Image 1 (cartoon, rainbow, N blue to C red):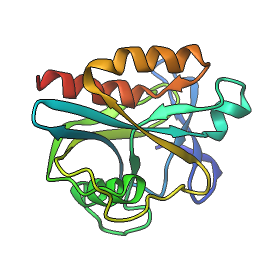
Image 2: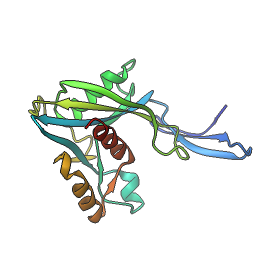
Image 3: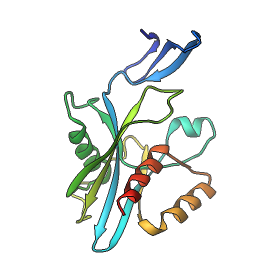
Image 4: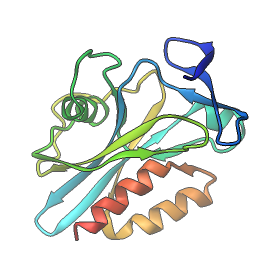
Length: 186
């Protein structure tokens, strides 16, 4: 049974025994059942685009890793809406962070770990197909964390990501995983 070393509403530090019997300290989210990562796939005939979010993430800039992170819409399942399903969280987070409603949602992968040596957090990756990219509401900034939304043609994504890295920005691993699952569909 893991021991709670530090406890807040949104994050705990816990310790568990490693296979060698030594203490292994890791982060855990006590307020969520899962994390959803949403790949907004905007389609118009043969044209396909992905909507990215430019984020200010305190752990990255506090440690001088990057000013901005390039990510995808994401959120915690059950943190604000108790009892919500993963699918409900995908719909809610997509609407909140992009203003869009999906025509179709496909769960592409589940139980994806982000940094298994550091956190117990796992994610579900969903592809949200949007055929009418007209916002139905103004997207949130989430307290200044979400600073921009960038729509990129699917065939220009490698160039876009390289340009962002050249600017010193980071790219989330979940974003790369989400893109992988979109590319599998080609």
